[in-house]
Image 1: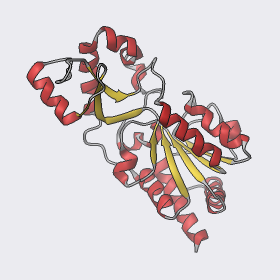
Image 2: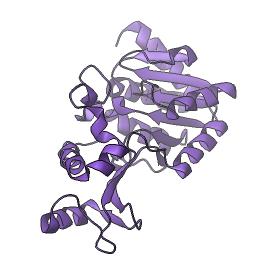
Image 3: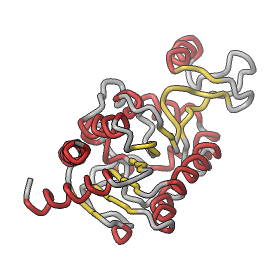
Amino acid sequence: MNTEIDNLVKSAAELISNSNYCIALTGAGISTESGIPDFRGPDGLWRKVNPEIATYSFFMKNSEKFWEFHLNFVKKFKEVKPNNAHYALVELEKMGFLKCIITQNIDGLHQAAGSKNVIELHGNLRTVSCISCGRKYRYEDVYMLIEQCGLPPKCIECSGVLKPDVVLFEEPLPYEAIMTAYTEAYKSDLILVLGSSLSVYPAATIPDIVKSNYGKVIIINLQNTEKDHLGDIVIYGRLGDILPKIVEQVKLNYK
């Protein structure tokens, strides 16, 4: 690690050590090191696939083709494991510094690593719901339904079409999740923005809320973000390398 980044790591650790209510906002960049491709980067999914297929209107018009795409998409998540960045956040939570993680990701890797307080803004890949009656299913049950009756999977109670519990384009974020995230942001005096381009709203407004209440903002990302100007500390690099270094420094400060 070069001297400049080393100094930034020490400064970030000091802000965390002195914070009263630190939260994190994570985007696709924290999971790319686990082998999950991002969506908007140079090699992102939406450069290879027309994002229209992930719109709610496409799902409603052609749920069979949507499900073909979705099942292929889900395969990419089957074998992935949390990486060093996920585990670093678990350590910060265990030490009492990190109060919650607000994530734009649907991969569940924060929970798999051991994080307890995770707010999922864009849904998850654990459950599927009937768009007619709201009944929820686990993916294991959905695969059985597909084997029996083909695509799209349908509800065993009302025959309504099943939809993954992920937020599609044209859909609003879950009200409870975004309100809880805003509440956490208003309480926070420090936010770690990790692997997010800060280009997707309303999630991108969360650092603004912290900053407007005189809180500090630490941004760590491979590339520049749309809100680097908000950052009290901005570090460009791999989260799996940088976050563990910050946590080690926090431990030294903590002693």
